[in-house]
Image (tube, rainbow over all chains, first blue to last red; front, side, top):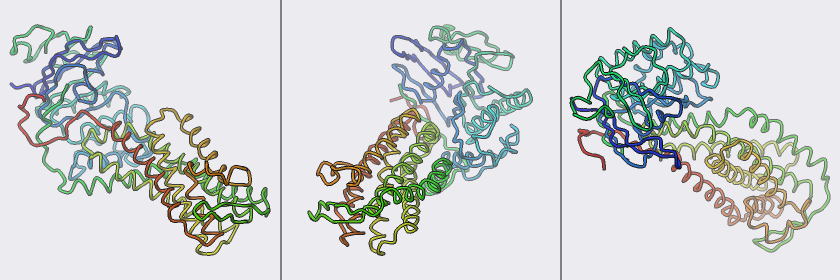
Length: 218
Length: 281
């Protein structure tokens, strides 16, 4: 199967500190990839590079299809309500209606905060809104940076139900986390160490085998 | 590095995105800029208090004010002249502060909107129009409150209103520039307060013996002050000086919007129809 995300030889340094050192990553439609690493390993840098919000020193990223990016810190406008955020991003994505946004709000338990300003939301609820904005246009590729930070247990489970639906519909998901509680949820687990990805476990069809490269490459 | 081929626009997309995007961005930009409680408090409380305080302190001593366009020196009521100066000062602080705060707080959010597909020119156009509307509205309010302290001729009042609108636009644009350049609240507030105080008070001969010197032509409030005083005391319309004030506003706005465009630029390509199979450029 053709990779929907193909990153090759990503390099990024901040001054003398080398964060990405030839990172490769291929993700196929319907695949869920977790990028794991210690604090400061460069996980968010990698995701920003994949999303295109950060210019790398070298390397290429090829994405096919629409992209949804959920940053680690909830990027919201405190004076706007939850509903206004949805309308703003529906205009950005050029969506004709808010049907999907309403569905996502219901599933994540956000609907009751529709008329609440983002500035008055709790940390976990802000994170829900942050996630909904990334999912609003039903993208083909999802890049999620610590998406369930601050979620309560019920919301955490709802999140995984949502991810299951997305995978079933062929959406590719790259998720960053520093803690993996349930490894079997993922198709691929990759540790980011010294700026390169190291495969931890492959329980599903992984690009490594089909591309005939070493374990540094997914 | 490049990110290429964000293809396959999903179904259900709006057929008139540009108009819808502009309307949405304008509505929410106005909401953001009118939700600043401190600026609202300053508007309601500070403007009349400032007028009253300045009038009580200055009294009605006679002052000489030079109109640089004609070379005439007007002898004017110092209290009335100071009311104009106080209005310009209050507007520089309130509008500059409100716009700075709104722009700085939403910069990362605007970047996310652009990343999600918002057209940068649309966002810039909406922000510019919202700042213009807010500036004009606040200037009108300050000019109306002025009538509670002094009743100039109708033409004179309109000249003051025009000067107020231009100074509000100038400091709104200055707030925009600082909002995209300055990272901390304190630095921005300090620059607006010091800049506004220095600029507007130097124009008033009451507190500044240099007020009629040519050096003041290089300050942003010079044009609006000259236009307002000439219109209200000299019955002359110095359009060139009003245009000079607008040039300051345009200069600040262009610089601010260029920086805004650079800071909200993303490496992501706008989604388009395509196969997604081409190699990156």
